[in-house]
Length: 305
Ligand SMILES: Cc1ncc(COP(=O)(O)O)c(C=O)c1O
Image 1 (cartoon, rainbow, N blue to C red):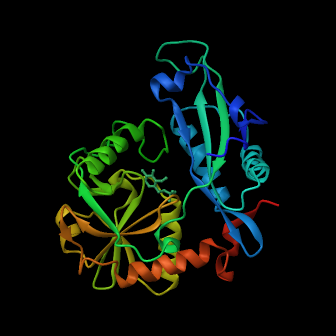
Image 2 (image 1 turned 90 degrees about the vertical axis):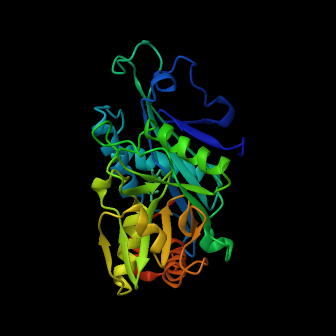
């Protein structure tokens, strides 16, 4: 982490080392925080933020689902994100806007506390598509079930969802895998710990629907749109655990992961155990699109300069 960078806190850019919170911050005790994960790419037209309005929209939806009153409007948050990236002087980075209940009144009820907003950015390695041809991820179907949206709104990108996801991630890593795949309370596939999931069979792509309790991923949406425009069929349907074992290809999508191939699940090779042809094609196209090299998708970018 570059400690010389600045962090936007409640409307002001403050030095990295001064971006502090009180230990009695409500969110630290009760997980009353929502956030976003966004990428800025170095495109031929300079640093550009990928799908900024969609991320800001989702941040505000997350706030609404928790009745959290955002103290800034969407324009102010978007400008705050742009200013944070600009101040970092980074050409490519991962951006983390966060809204949380601050400190003041302890106890479960969050609302007496002020909603605080912070925006940070840092360098984060790009996904597999630019890292070269890897062996793909080895995944484990988690023993932890994805939280059900009858218990909390799973379409909110809320910190509280990530305790469940972190349990699954840690279990998978401890057991020698790279990532977890989580089933929902109905036994259907939901998503990875921080990625959406897709399977490919006979050239057709399927992905769990939003009502499988997943995050409405912006990379998921981008990949669906890209795949369809390349003439590939994509359907949203319930996916069973056994579908994973007989799929020709499996891949995951997310802002951090981009498009990640899955080549083994529970020690069963996926297809021939190598990243599949459609996965590779989508990785390559997503790479071109996200780096601003595909004219058809330039309206997905917001310039930093
Ligand atoms: C639980 C979960 N699902 C899916 C995703 C993918 O969403 P996006 O593509 O918007 O980053 C993420 C990443 O933010 C996530 O944390």
